[in-house]
Structure formats: structure tokens, C-alpha cells
Image (tube, rainbow, N blue to C red):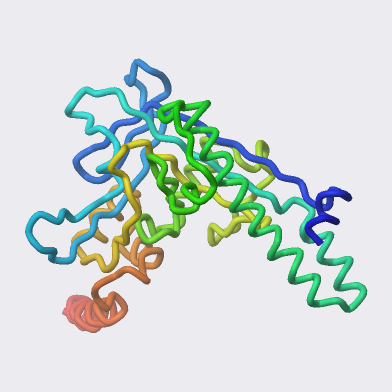
Length: 267
């Protein structure tokens, strides 16, 4: 099937990326600027920080730690990307489904997923070596690439380090990913076609993957304020990472507020 995809051009791969002047703020957000003067704000990326108690010497990390703080007045950058190898997948799968060949309908989607991941790796390598060039002398073989021995990371919204999916909307807006790469976002921030990868490029030599894990109500509230959301909206998108029962708290608040409101109205 892979030979058929290649020879008959069943699938199309497209990608878009951007490199932006950036600096981190103390609240775990990263500011992106319109140009090198860094005077005009283009957008903000909002991240979360680990909150669980750790042994001495082990920091509670946020992805914002991997971009130079604004207070240092150091010039730093961040990359955004969206790639797909899945344009044409649905049509190819439909041809198999019309022949009642469910196995190959599933297989073409699986191969498209793997090709999208491979394309994401290729683009990351080219960004490191050519476009951004912070690792221009990188000479890693394939095994070293698989072990991720290169400098920098490419986490995506939905990864353990940045589990909140609506940050994709900022990526899509800044890159015009729908027009430039043919990838759309659903209302729930799923990518279409599904064989797609999107996220961030961090160049910091100490950057690494980690999980935010559970967060408290204080950080959920802070995140809601940074996003301009009511707390309930933040809790909806952060639900898998909440370290408290927000539904029980809402029910408790409702049970308290309703009798008070009724008492005031009857008085």
C-alpha cells in the first residue's frame, strides 16, 4: 500500500510554520511580537505549571521556562507549525469501503498518520538546521533522531506539557493554517484531516518533555483570567488535569447561592 500511495499519489502533504520574536512573562505566558523591535504584541501563548510537591532541586516546570524572560531583555524566539500528510486520505479510504474492504480502509488511514509524524520530524529537522538554524551543524543519524538526541522540542497542544487544546486556535490564526496547509479545526479543536500534527518549536538546549499533571483551583482561576474566560470555561477544557472535583464544588456553590437568593427575594 505504501508503494501504491507513492506511485499513484493518493495523498498530499502540506506544511506551514512560522518563527516569531518572543519572550516569557512571569505568569507562564509567552508574548509573541510583530517584529524585532518587540514593541507591538502579536499574540500570547498561555501555558500551565506543574504544582505537585517535588524533592529539593527539582523544579516545577512550565513550557514558558524555555523562552527567555522579558525581564532579561534577551531576544528569543518560538516557532509554530502545522503539518499534514492526510490530504486525500478520506477519498482513498472511501474507495476501499465501497469495495467492503474495511481492513485496507483502516490501513490507509494508519499509514497517513505515520507519514504525518514523519513529515513533522522532517520539518522540525529542517527548521533546526536551515530555517531557524540554531543547530546548523547537527549530523545525527536516524537512530539518534528516533532517540530525540537533537536540541529542542516540538510539543503540541494536548501533550502532557500543554494539555489545553484551544491554544491551537492561536496557532491557526497566526499561521493561517487552513489556507496554507489545508488543515481545519473543529469546534472541539480536533484537526481535519486527522493525519496532522501541530505545535510549537522550542530551541532551548535544556528543553524537554514533561507532564503538567494535576493542577489546583488557583491555577485554573489564573488560567481563566489570562484567557479571558469564566472559571467554568477553563474547568471544562482543563477537566482531565484538575486536581479537585469542580462539578462537586459547582453543585455546592449552587446549593448555597439559591437559598440565599430566594431569601433575599422573599425579604
